[in-house]
Image 1 (cartoon, rainbow, N blue to C red):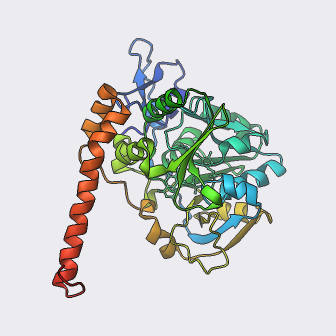
Image 2: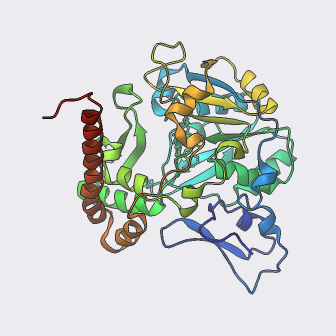
Length: 388
Ligand SMILES: Cc1cc2nc3c(=O)[nH]c(=O)nc-3n(C[C@H](O)[C@H](O)[C@H](O)COP(=O)(O)OP(=O)(O)OC[C@H]3O[C@@H](n4cnc5c(N)ncnc54)[C@H](O)[C@@H]3O)c2cc1C
């Protein structure tokens, strides 16, 4: 038996653990991978239930929670520029590789329409891991791969979304001293179907293959706002503010069902360390860099030890949890389900991404204008603004 479809986070730990390969990860109607059991092969051993992070969250939460918060950035400018935020992930990866360990992260496939986890000790992968991919990554056999390396005594650093970290913990079934789990503050990824439709169109409009793609491009090295950047084989480059693109609109509109009721927020975190964007960082603080500032929250003693060993490739200073939370409600809250989300998914498949975004944008803009009108009215009533 598996968790019901609307609660499933698509971690695939069940498929990885199944001793008779009776579970296959297949795209659901929104394009997110979901486990499907082959009833004829299944031996009803129940191992799939035991590794489900959603069903077992109570036993997975990080116990020695003592949140110490930091903020900062990687000191190498080029690495900072290619990272989504302040480059904490790269700094962590480098320190583990320097000790002979293995690192896990997410890379794109060749045409950027899919993303997948890799566990490696090859430093060349760090470049591919860098920056956020806003589609849900495929896990395949990442859990058993990590287990094998841990059992060999190798140090492993796993960085992933909170549900993926919880799934890793559930799959392993015990604590490993040589494993550090880092999760990202998470808004919830969108469907790989969005990437497929968007990139197919971009490529056909330009007429050339896409050779580089980033949804967290830092235009002129600046971290905010985020740009989508695609570089074509011809050398041409397309750059647009991320949320002005169809991809950005769909990212905001179409998350997995479970992300609207995420089981891994706030006190349900399962990681040693959480990292994210420090959106509300004090611009005068020593830890601030306009090229990207990471928020780093340490939950466990193991996480504190790991951070202490991270060396000098990152400038890190103490920060306040409440300051991080202010700009990052996703630390404790789930993303809100936008009106029309379910129809958006259906129409996108029927009419294509461009058509559905064209239809939805005015509605979303209308909502914004309505909100503006309400705020204006309230300001007038409060005597803070004059009637025009
Ligand atoms: C879907 C998604 C939603 C996010 N939402 C928020 C948010 O609301 N607020 C916030 O502060 N931060 C959010 N983040 C995290 C933020 O975008 C940065 O990834 C984080 O701050 C790390 O940046 P960095 O500069 O340290 O590392 P980078 O060098 O940018 O490294 C990125 C790290 O993220 C991993 N990664 C990239 N894509 C994925 C993916 N699809 N699934 C799992 N792991 C991935 C890489 O393997 C690498 O470890 C989100 C990230 C993702 C992938």
